[in-house]
Image 1: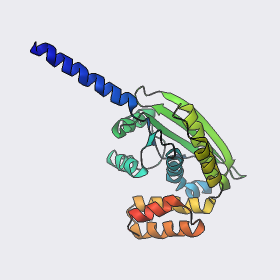
Image 2: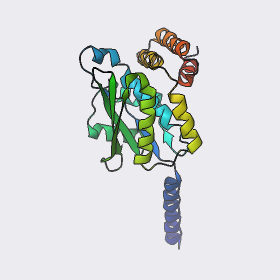
Image 3: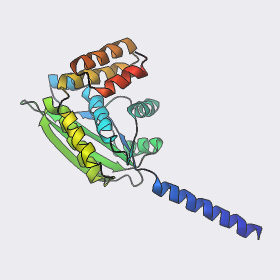
Length: 230
């Protein structure tokens, strides 16, 4: 009788656990992007490896039906795994990082530019459980329209991964907001992230403030300043 009760209790806990897992939100993490620009542009655009990832996190986070890992949490894991340098990471490592973060989907990719200032942003999304690429896409736009480009790729990822739909009004509002963000502000913000991760607080604070001088509505920059106590 006791054994029967024990097995019944175990079965109940297993069912509850499975139900909770099924009801949990899909979770996504975004790795830093590989800088495929050549020549002088490679060094010039280097900060965008983190900047693009951060923007993508911002744009995907508007979907309240999913959970997106914050960049600070990702940075901590990458440093612990000695993977803090942006660049190509093999699929096995992508999946390993995904398991450490406890997510369902890992997003990674890269960008290249050409002489006419076009940027091609490519993305691959991995299923952490299977280790397989479950969706791949890309976007192309002028580098001056970088925020618009990342916003469009974020929407493609949301659809491609079959994530809960973003309310239409929210999606349209984000599209319009993306059109207002100047490239100079994005680059300053990206440089600020590099300084922050390097432990250069004063430099990061100044760069975040310069970001807001270029675009006072940059909410992410305001949040970063608050984190730094500035």
